[in-house]
Image (cartoon, rainbow, N blue to C red; front, side, top):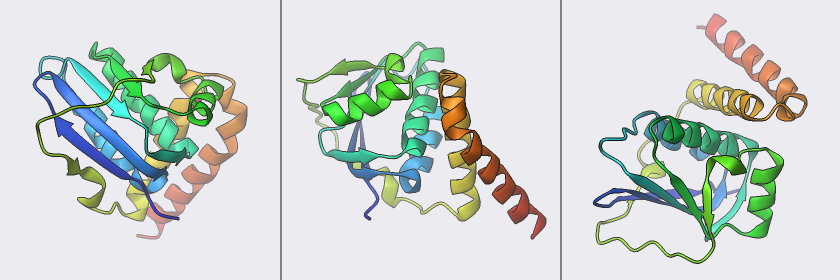
Length: 168
């Protein structure tokens, strides 16, 4: 199972992001870190192109929800481009579809170089666990139907984090 490549390019008024491959918990930390640093006076828009995204796990979708909530708070619209029917269905099922604008036709054109943010550093086990936890807690807060879906995941990850913290 290959982890996705997440490519990012800065434009004059925002950021363009491309997700290529299987988007899983392994590639969430760079997106989460990017989301926590977006500021409305620097960025007016964000586009995420999912044309080459073949699949997303719940952690990645939860990370997208974190990103969507940060952007909403900063009053920055996020447009998701070229999501296929299966990905749109997943986003609707988890109730996070409402955080984004969808466009099936547009292609990103940027004159700036693309940077692969997933190749910068590989997060450690603790960082991944914290991201998994925050992503699933966010999914549960965005849509109450997700509580029954992810309550066990959250409990297990919290237990895992606690065990790892006690062993150091």
